[in-house]
Length: 601
Image 1 (cartoon, rainbow, N blue to C red):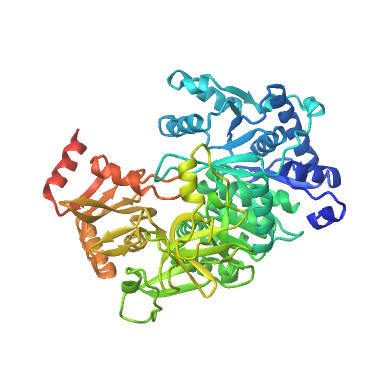
Image 2 (cartoon, rainbow, N blue to C red; image 1 turned 180 degrees about the vertical axis):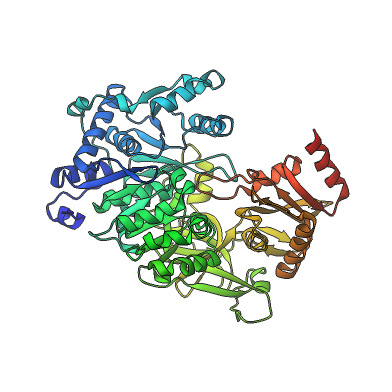
């Protein structure tokens, strides 16, 4: 039987930290089901109870206490697993600041280790909690990374469970740092977002209310533990709620998207979240013959966040899986960022998502104007990201003069609430700029500057793009995802969610470039015709002239851990002529020749 926090409060044991929360659950409901891991997305591990998790956390913490590690920073390097949950809790039990990071992968070390190294240097991490197999991978390259040699490496599988009896409660305060959530680094060097115990507990209480969790909720997640969506709502919110959670690995999902839906069916899951691409992948990869095994009627909150939300993808998912009991009301588009712990807004349970059809020409001038969907004029269809989460405050601010925008204008989204993180680790100047913003004409603040552009309409938050990704051609704003979706909808040979639109400066003028991956097994591709069609479609839909289009091989478009397109990285590869192309069109014949020269090297 679930012991709610309301009952815990009545017994004068109100938890203020995650340590107190898990200790309370282990005391009041020791045998209750906390987590199950699904190997390959299917095979169940033995259920992990609150008592077992508490014992594992105390044993890991006791070992860390023996090393006088309180206040130190510790990397968490694991495959998706129950072990990483115990390691995370163990760090908090010892007063050690946890750093969930993507584990290095065999065959991809050259790509993953430089970022890991930069995090180690930035955080001045002295410890790493991991598995034997990952430790062996690191040992093979530690000569090239002296920082790794200076750290203490702990294989938590070898920690003696009897150490749990030697654990000493560190008496951590709610305002003490719990963990550092490193940003993806898609547009800059990774920064460590400082999140306290209070941030985590306060925001979990918000998500319980805003997302409609109750004592009967059941969750499943494949979102990785090192991403804020996976860690906070995927893993920590079930612990806060005292309800069971089933974990898959991201690789199991990508390999067999149907398994995610089968697990929702099997365990009668009420809440599960994913980025936009995951719903698209399900539509494209799930076979009709699998539908008979799916019942998605229990799914109350199908969270959709972490990347731009494509209304067409949501519509396709509803149309495809409505025979399996899925409806529009079950979708829960949302918006958030690690600097706010997680979610700023989310669609309430039981309501339909709000879709806005706007005049495209007005939107490119940052003006919100409704449009007739049947009009011959160009329109932009944007999915709302739901209502503000609980007492969250949002202001739409002109990012240049820092004054409030009129209600019909797009501006930067500023957020204010105790869910705001404490800042960026060891970066006081950037912290002040990002977390301590004040509205110039009202004096209100401090606000968190999200760096995202959007607007409020009838109580719903809409996100139109990122300031840094914005493409400005002849004084008109264009959002890259709009152009990318236009291209990808043209031909099944063009790989969904693997394109990047960005601008470069040519002869002093900002020009549009599109790099688009082609599906790996495409046959009889008429690339020249396709390039011409893309040029025409962009001209017709967006009324802009494209400077260059690259049809690229699979593996070209880089993404962050959360699936966001790394447009700046793609832009750099284009400028370096380092893209592995299938075909290319450009206004500048010299650029075509330079690409050809690099391809022949």
